[in-house]
Length: 250
Image 1 (cartoon, one colour):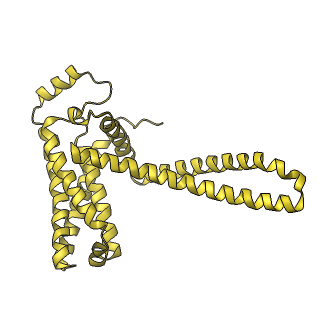
Image 2: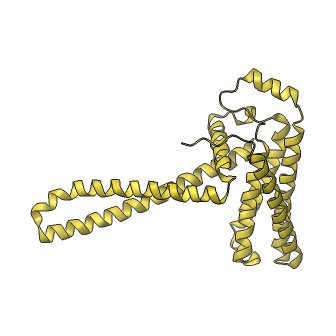
């Protein structure tokens, strides 16, 4: 599970980076206000300078509270807009924990491991290409964003396909082994994952062709077909989602 674990680490790094970036801006703005206030107080009323530090602490606390409320509100809006996202984030969080613990490989159904690795190997191939300036110049800004979003949604479907086919926290090893023996080929999940894997590989092939052919009508048609196939997968996921328990709230 090398590539899948690398994908989970990448998501974790991006999450931490985004959180640190937001916190950094809070600190910068708060320090600027603190400095401006200190200079103003030092000029106008030097005796009040000692009150600036408690004011700074209060200001930072208010900024953190506001940021937390604002982030929660944005998150709720995103979940309402995309009903699959909350379940995806919940699954990713659990799988990331297993990756950190080094137990990811033993928790995934063995019949799905190879396909999962293949899917995320193709994902990294596409992701690396999309990071190059040439991919933007070939596809154009709008199509480039669409391809990025299609890849993100495709790998999300890959994660959804293994729902119920990995050993969750608290499940005993004997119970998990019995489940594997009852469905050794994980046929339903394997079929879903194979379809997602084929779509990601198709995007990877289009990316490879684009390097030599550039932007062509044929390649754009292929990308559109992939987008439509991913949307169909998502519609099936939404239908299945209704039968699942509500995600846990932290």
